[in-house]
Each structure stands twice: as structure tokens, then as C-alpha cells.
Length: 197
Image (cartoon, rainbow, N blue to C red):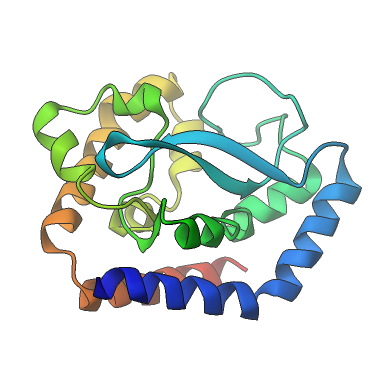
């Protein structure tokens, strides 16, 4: 109950304070390339329930291709590259927090294809909590795109190396989550983001 109240207050305050930035980002996306401002993709939420996550669109509209984004992906637009580097593309997920699909802090929600690969013992633990905008695994793999770009087979690297490590972080978070740990993760996230601007 306390976590949910914290999420609601935090997401509402963030949307209010960041509204000028959100409007500028939305306008930039719209002017940079044809297509919608938002990109919605199905992710797996708490209890294995699917939901549509909100992001600013960073790729050409209708671009197909692999689920993973690796290095200088040609599908990414000029504005999209900036939004991804600064993580501004993730800000619309505060809407998902208000809707109750996500939390400010929690394991990052995965696409169904990768959730199907979760070991049963970790799946139950990770999906027992709401997914979040940020979490310890996201901080540990802040340079994930670079790591994948350096791999001979990016999807295999993700499935066999990165995903298991992220799942371990997520399971540990789910077991020890508290308001204090959430505040710590948010503070570390803010510091990392400020360094990348």
C-alpha cells in the first residue's frame, strides 16, 4: 500500500514537473519522422499479466526487425538516438505507473518471448512484483546496447549472458524491496542519467 501510494505521488509529480520536456520531446518525434509520437509494445507485468508499455517512438514507423536494439541500429531516427541516449524515451512510462501496470522501481518488464525463457524458480519471484521504470539490473547493464553490439550473436549473448544476470538482480530486488531500497535505486538512476546528458 505504501509503495503504491509512493508510486502514484512520484509519477504524478514527475509528469507535472517534466511536462514541458515531454511536450518538446513529443513535438521533436513528430517533426523528425512520420508516425505516431508513442510506441506501444506488449510486455509481461505482475503475475504474468500482459500490458502495453508506453515509450516515445525512436524508430522509423513500421520498422520491423529483431526485438533487440544493437549499437547504431539503422531503424533509429535522429531524434530517437538522442532520446535513447538520455533515456527520455522511457519517461512516458510514468503513465503506466499511474495506470497500475508499473512501479517507479521494479524489475524491467520483458517481452513475452524472453519471459518464456525464465527458469521457473526465478519466474515466480520476478513476476511477483510490479515491473518498474528502473531497477538494479538496469543500472548494472546501463551499457547493454554497447555490449550487444560487440557480440558476434547479440540475441544469444542476451539470452545466455545478460538475461540470466538481470534475472538474478531482479529476483534479489523482489525479495528485499522496501521504500528505502527504492529511494536508493532512484537516486543512483538519477545520478547515472545526469552523467549521460
